[in-house]
Structures are given as C-alpha cells and as structure tokens.
Length: 302
Image (cartoon, rainbow, N blue to C red; front, side, top):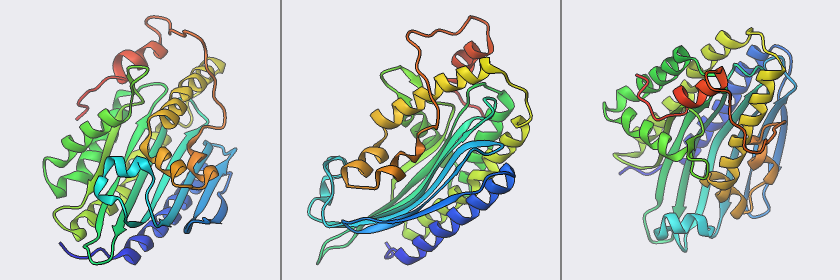
C-alpha cells in the first residue's frame, strides 16, 4: 500500500472547487460566488463560496476545507475505534445546490480525504464521497440519465462498484423517522483505502470531475419550465426533509460540529427558504403524489 500524497489530494480539491464554481456561474448567468476564507483555531481552515439570488440557483454553496487536530470527536472514534489517540487531517470539497425552479432538483456532492497519524505506526487513511439527487417533481428521463452517468463513472474501476455504491447511497440517504428516501440516490462511498492509494485517488477524482456531467443536463432540461405558487410551496415543503436529514442523520454534519468546525460553512447546505406543514398529504393522482409513489422508492434506474 503506497503512502498517501496529501499535497496532491489538496491541489485536486482546490482545483475542483474552482472548476465547479466557474461552470455554475456560467449556467446561472446572473450571480457570482462570494468567497469567504477562514481559519480554524484548532488547526486548518477553508475556502467557502456561496452564490445567492441567481437566475437559476436560489443558493449554491461549494466549500473546500482542510482541518487538522490532535484528537478526534466521539462520532469518529465510535465509527473507527482504531483512530483513538491519533492526530488527523480531514479535507474535501462539499457542495449543495438549491435551484429556484421547483422542476430542477436539489443536488449534493462531496469528495473527501482523511488521514490519521501516530508516531511509530503506519497512517490510517481513506477516501469518501459521492453525489445524490433530490427532485421535487420526478422525471424518468432525468433519473435514468443521473444513474447512467454514475454507472459509467464507476465502470472503469469494476463492474461491482456502481451497484455497491448505489445501494450504499440508497441506504445512507434514508430519512428513518419519515421512513422515506431523501431523493433518488446516486453514489455514496466511505472508508475507501484499497487496493492502493493511486486507485482510490483516481476513483475520487472521477467522481468529483464527473458530477456536473450528471447534473447540468438536467438543469438545462428543466430551467425554462413554467411554475406557479403551487409548485413553489411544494418545493419549500420538501426542502424541510432535506433539513431534517442533514441535522438528524448526516455523519458529516455531526463530525463537523463536534470537531469544532466552522458552523457557517457546515450549515451552508441549508436551503435559504423552507417550510413545514402539519400532517401534509398530497392529493392522490397529482404530480406531487407521483414523487412519493414513483421516485422516492428504492429502484434500479439503469
């Protein structure tokens, strides 16, 4: 197992953030990203970028962070007890895009690297990441396209990769207290450190670089669809599910808050507007009902 090249990984993440921001600005055509560079008292820092009030994107956040520490929070050592007593570095790019048009899905992507070191012992390291799609109104062609791109990105690394990471995404982005998926899934992987560093890094680069090829064609297909207050209110209601998952179940959010991360950057995934409605149920046979019956289900799209 070759030794991780930390500076190479960091350079890729910084370049990826730059590339994604430029493409999103181009698609939006109106707003640009505000940059906020920050330092963390415990060690490390980051570069947060947020676009607001755009023509296409109501809010988009693309965050790079590289944090260090001498000990890990309980949420990490509970998952990996062998990390106790080790110093660590955690870095990555995380993004969440909340479009204005309710017919364009919300999307999330993340690629990350973690390494924990202790004098006299080999480092413990792994990659993680993936991307997932959260539609408010479902379109079969969008779901098929999304998962086809995901499958194609995984294919060079083995025929078993896509079904494995697709299932992991379905299982991870499941809102247990609602007994429903957050969206139509995609890819999710974690603890990736075999067969070697180069292969794991190449896979992570493929996922990071391939995200926009999965998402932007959907944006282009839906951006000019007319919508009314009915669709907007349903979008705001469904955004509540997004908030619930991130604050209750997401391991990354929990790790960031418990490790003393920068709260503004951690919670940039929150939508700018959201609403809750007591005991809401969509009208049977409506497009809103179709989201639940045809899309918020575990399904093999390709």
